[in-house]
Length: 499
Image 1 (cartoon, one colour):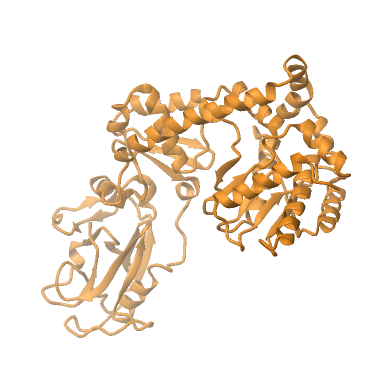
Image 2: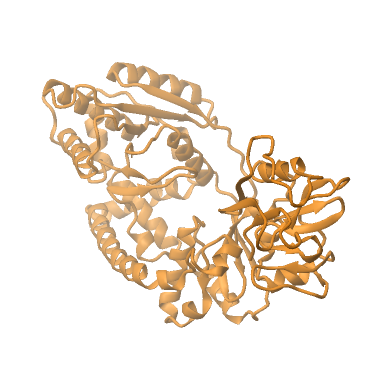
């Protein structure tokens, strides 16, 4: 059977993706394979593409993987999985079937949950340099544009789907997502399936108009096409123009945003463990740019973008807030917070975490202290159980050094009968007399006041380790040493980074 022009078009698009991304011979093409008519045609085109490469000896062992996701939502799901495995065997393409267990929470869209779960399942099979392929086509693009209009989205949403776009699933590096059939209509794809005798599944949920995309596909778009037959193609051109506009906006934002961000060299970055947005600089921008800049800041922190209304409310709330206001806006698993004229994004897991962890990062330091308890203060230090007289410990994202020394501010060694321990989130009423790197406190001051004085935000305080000798707080790692527990004169002591 001679190869049809549309199949050749799909194969050319796949080749363009490989060339554009300079994919190596070991990089995979991974197809999201449902077994519906669209992905069936793309699976067939992939098999033809690989055959053409093998026959020409250009790429004898082109890596391709089909991934079918079993959502468990239909009584026919097992049959669909078997269909995909059988067709993959016919195409001589490897396949993996991933099973999902979906839980729908109140006010969550089943469509969105299934889509997110599907992409995360497929992402497990994507490595650096691999490319995800999906079978979206021109009519899917029209649906996406209409949904973006319904939601009141701007150029970014109206740009809809690109033929090649970045793809960054959770806990994965940047990958690429290609749609080689975006230039074909649904009718062309159905004709391809019929011409090539391709058997495909029919998902009964596609007839359920309670889902917005199905409603558009089954009720609205047929009427639009009856009135304007070329509307899918012309809407795709509009999407391309919106994409160009968005590129211009993104380019301008890429120049405006960086000066507004805290850098790793800023003192506040050491204390907050997060890249902050400087609110003074932010609110000096025109209102229209504030929305674009905030979107970019939230995307940088992988926050699900709120609607335009909610984004405007968020900006207004930060603009009206007093300097000491404790703002905490929750978006999915992220917290948008305000601290000292900066906006920060904090992961929900970090925000809710109550420290009760093993001391993997502090173990060497604590072991060294315990091992050297009771030594004469002027003795030569002995090594800890691992043979270490110096090392590192984790202070948030920073690795800070510790060592035994006889000069500089340092913690005295524990005395006989003193038990060494680490405590997280000690009481804010604890009285402290801290010695910092360059100054000291003579009068006692409550810990909660010192947190403010040291500019430590609330969400970081519970993650900073306190060293105790028996019931006495003797040091806050990375911040200070208690005055009463300083090593004297040239006595041996523990030295570590101080604020």
